[in-house]
Image (cartoon, rainbow, N blue to C red; front, side, top):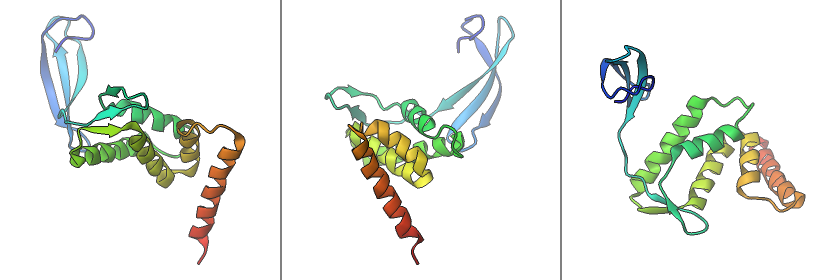
Length: 157
C-alpha cells in the first residue's frame, strides 16, 4: 500500500477491525518511511451488472454516484448517511442476486426513487424532479398531486 503522505511503497498494518456492518475491514496503517498513520477500508469486490445508459453506453456500477444523488436529494432532511449507505447496500445486494450481466440505468433510477419515497417524500420529489426531467410545472404538479392523494389514502381509517 502506497503512503498518501510521502508516496513510499511500503506500509505496515497496525490494527485491523471488522467494519460496522461486517462487510468491510478497517485497517490502520503506518508508513515505513515517514511513520505517519492512515486508515484504509477493504471490501470484497463484487460482481455487479454493467449499467446501460440512455445512449446505450455501458459503464461499471458506481455506488458512489447513487450515494451522491441520494445525499443531494436528502440535503437538510432528517436522513443520515448511514441510512443512505444501508439502502444502497440493499440495492447492490439485490442487483448481485439478480444475476443479470447488464441493467438499464432507468431501473436503478426507479429503484432509488422507490427507496426515497419510503424514506422521505421531500427527498423523493427532489430526486424525481431531476431524474424525470419534468418539462414544465404541470408535470411537476401532477407528481405532487399523486403523492398527496397517496398520502391521504394512508391516513384514512
